[in-house]
Length: 259
Image (cartoon, rainbow, N blue to C red):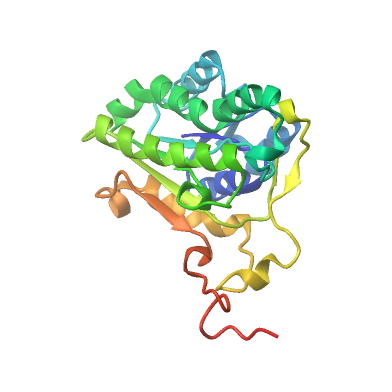
């Protein structure tokens, strides 16, 4: 198995869940420190690999490592991503827009295409699975800024198109988290630092009234990796948004008491 964006957040939690289920994982990230601590926690089940997912060579190296270390590749999890800090289009200076677009789309969209292309032969041979991390913003506005929302909508299209192109040999699906306590890297071209995904008061606007942990998403990723349980599922993006998409106008949920 290969999982990108493994150094922190949902990716790190999912690696731990996969290892608990008996998987062996090539954990990919640019954060060498995060990878080292993850490998220490998970032992020999995790092979850390610090590469840039935006490069063809980095993705080839990840596949080569999986095949060499594990004898093959059956699951590819495309999880690496960055945010635009919910920056509206009109708040981005025109001269900065092209560079910001290219940087964000390179990580959020291109990297996934590169990963699947590099892994295609190995996944076809194993009749494996691809799982991509989408977002609430894959379906709705205001889950980020213009660039982030566009990239996550694009990723939904990638999931559907690749599910078609790789059928019947490889299943391609995604998970679309809504809220998770993570710190995402911003766009360097805009001078953005890492930012918290959860703001004060977030729980109160969710129908389920609780911010889920990063660990709570692990079961969905193991479900889609397991052909016994989800061998009939492809081209699907599972929404896991704590009910954000069904919020009411007056209050988050029918039985939620508001002041």
